[in-house]
Each structure stands twice: as structure tokens, then as C-alpha cells.
Length: 269
Length: 289
Ligand SMILES: Nc1ncnc2c1ncn2[C@@H]1O[C@H](COP(=O)(O)OP(=O)(O)O)[C@@H](O)[C@H]1O
Ligand SMILES: [Mg+2]
Image 1: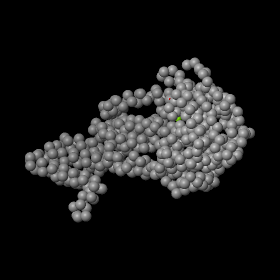
Image 2: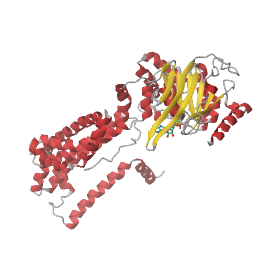
Image 3: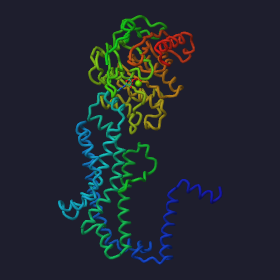
Image 4: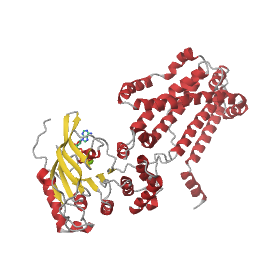
């Protein structure tokens, strides 16, 4: 095999190389466009300026990122706990499910972000509101996916377990819950991206720290490079959370065979 | 819907003493004194549907002797699964009486082994741990039953796959694992609902022989649902032919063929006569088979 064939072959099995090439080309095009059309820095900064802001502004960004991360995790973990809990309660009785599931679906249609100003009335400005918005956005996908997962267990498996003399608790622990895990993880991954959105929205409405606050301050100063850098930090936080979940999923349900490679389709908002 | 009674029951044909199986290695099963294992008496099942009630089983009666291998044979939709589920206690029949070992079936039976068309293995458990689920739920001694599970799996040719996950096995291997799981606690009654229905012909042949082998070695009553005429004749002491709409027993045919039966037996005139007899029943019912 000659060299170019070898390289082509290597790329065929390492798709990420193509992605890296595309990203590098896009950054180069970005830089060239600014130079060619003489774009003002407050409209669009050069990639190098953004990078400089990311690095030299780290002293400001890192504490802000930590604060935002706390709100994201607070809202997300609350959503996981209460979401899975509510799903279990609703599924414990046909009547409860029938009474509340339509409500749940209806509640999904409320634009949660619009509730944020209302939340400041009850919770004040700052962490509690941020956590609450993150929670509200990430709660529903978790409830719904948990319910879908639990209801989706094959009835034959339950029959087999019942014929073994298994009680409801034993069946839940050994059969139902494990088979619902892939769906629960899918819900958590969607929720993780929504929790990031929620925390930022919470910060936008008046918080004094966090990356949302950094974004607004930079915006009022026409400091576009800092805004880009803040968005980059936010993206990285979202990615770390998402891939942490991927990792946990990978190790807790290695048997789940729809999982060939990483699933890169998080829900957006 | 009125319960029309055309001629659903054929009590005389099968309520009497069925062929014994204590002497099953001989050509002609002796007439018999075996105790009944399963009594199905006048059992009906009505399913409520959009278009009113649907009579899935119409006063079916059948007695199965201890150690007997009985097949329920019939086209899709004639109520075979419904009857098997009723016997298992997993569903409640609408009327009539079912007894297993002298006890009425009123809730899911736990002294049975059950195998469905799909293996219903837990994807996250290894083959061995899937079989051990039976012991776990029954709180049986772990060490003792792990050994038993290994032996069983070894016997069905899965000795080298104890730690494999279900998705790493072929369909036939998965079904063998499901059979081991159903037998781990050595139940006296095995209920099988088209266990080989989803498998290719060659795998099905192999598993038919394997099932016969297992059954010949340990005395078990088997209720075996199938829509395969050949499979039913090959395995059964009696073949119960069912007809649809409403589900009824049309004919009960005793299979007097020597055991162990081989695949070659299918080419013999005796076997052909049984097959012909069953096809005649289907034809008289206007059922394609
Ligand atoms: N839960 C149910 N509700 C309504 N109708 C059912 C239900 N289960 C089975 N049936 C109907 O009862 C008939 C017999 O079903 P089944 O016992 O599964 O047949 P078989 O196993 O012989 O194919 C079919 O017509 C089927 O549609
Ligand atoms: Mg069926």
C-alpha cells in the first residue's frame, strides 16, 4: 500500500480526523473573512483574539464558570431525583398515571423560560432562581423518558419473573429498572443540555456572578471577544457534563447495544 | 355474545385415562394409571374488545397425566396461548376450573417452568446469571444451584458460553438458555408456548431432539404449544388439535410411536398417517395448514 492509500485508509477508520480538518478550515475561513472584509472587532473578533481572551481572562472566567456549574448541577441533580421519583409514583397506580400524565404533557408546553421573571419574585435574584430554571427545563425529559423506559419493559420478562415467584419489588429491582436504564439515560442526556440553558437564563435575569453575568457585562462594553470566550466556556461545561453522562452510561449499561460509539444527538432548546 | 355450543368439547376423547408415559421407551405406551397433573375443566376465556366480547376459549376440557407430553396444535389465533397462560395462572380465565397437582389455579403458578417463543433473557445478565435468576427469586442455595445451572447449560451445549451476554448468542442458543432457566428448579410441569417458532428449520430440529432428550431423562409433564404438525407428532404423547373462533378442541390424537424418536421417523408411513390425520382435521374445519 502506498502512503496516500495508507492515509486514506487511516482516515476511513478515524472519522474524528475529518472533523478536526473541518474545524481548522472553518477557523481559517473565519480569520480570512475578517482580514479580507476588514470586519470591526466589536462585530466579529479574530479567532486569535478570542483565544487570547479565553487564556488571559481565565482569572475572571474560572470563578464565573464554577458558579454557573453549581447552578447547572443543582438544577440537573434536582431534576434527576424528583423526575425519576415522580415517574415512579405516577406508574405505581393506573389512576394516578391517567390523572396526571396529561397534565405533565400539558406542562411541557408551557415555555419554562418565560417563568424565570416570576421565579425571581418568589426566590429572589441569584442561585435559587438559577437552579430552579435549570430544574424546570431538565425535569420533563427525565420524567417522560423514565416513564417510557419503565412502561417499555417486555411483558414476557415480567411473566417469566412472576412464574419464578418474584414479588413486585424484586421484579422492579431485577427486571424493570435495569431495562429502563437506557431510556432514563437518554432523558438525562437531553436534560443535561437543557440544564445549561436554564442556568444561563437564570443568570441573565439579574445574577451578579456566573458566565451569564460575564456575557451581559461584556455585551454592554461591546467586548465581543469576551462574549465569544464566555460562550466557549459554557459550551465546554455542557460538553463535560454530557460526556460524563455518556461515560457513566457506558459503564453502567455496557450491554445496551444501540450504543455503538457515542450518541451525539443531544436535544436543544 | 351467547355461548353457542356447537361441539366444542370432545370430553369422551380425552377425559379418560391418557396414554401412560412410565413406559415411554417402548413402542406402545401402556394404558395407564398415571395421576392427573393438569385438569382443565370447562374453561372459557372472554376478551372484551371494541366490537364487544370475543370468545377466545369455549368450554375447553382436557386432562393431562403426570409425565405426559401434550401438544396444543392449531392455526394462529385459536386460543393456544390463551389456554397456556390460563394454566400458568398469569391470566385469569373467565370461567371453568383449572387444577395443577390437585390445587386450583387462582394466581400465577410458581411450581412450573415456562418458555415463550421469545427467550426473554435479561440482556444485562450473562447466560449463567440469567439461568440463576430462577434461583435468586426463589431464594434457593446459590452454590448448589450454580452447579446445577452449569450442568444444565453444559447439557444443552452452552458450557462454553456461561459468561456470554444474550446478544452474543444465536437465536437457538438463547432459546436453549431460556429452557435451562425454566428447568433449573426442576418443576414438575413445563409450559412451552411455541418455543421454537422463531427458529430456522435446522435449529428447530436440533432443539426438538434436545427437548425430547431432556424430557426422557427427567419425568416432567409438558404442555407444548405449536402450530407445527411435524413437531407436534415428533414430540408428543397426545396432540390436541384446536380450532379457532371460538377456540375449541377439535380432536385429540394419541401418538403411538416408539421413543426415543429420531428425525428419520418423519419419513415413515406411521408418521405420515398421523400427519395426514391431523391435516384431515384441519381440512374438515376449513383451516389451511
Ligand atoms: N388480551 C387480549 N385481548 C383481546 N383479545 C385477545 C387477547 N389475547 C388474545 N386475544 C385474541 O384471542 C384469540 C386467541 O389468541 P391466542 O390465544 O394468542 O391464539 P394463539 O396462541 O392460538 O395464536 C385471538 O383471536 C386473539 O386476537
Ligand atoms: Mg400464541
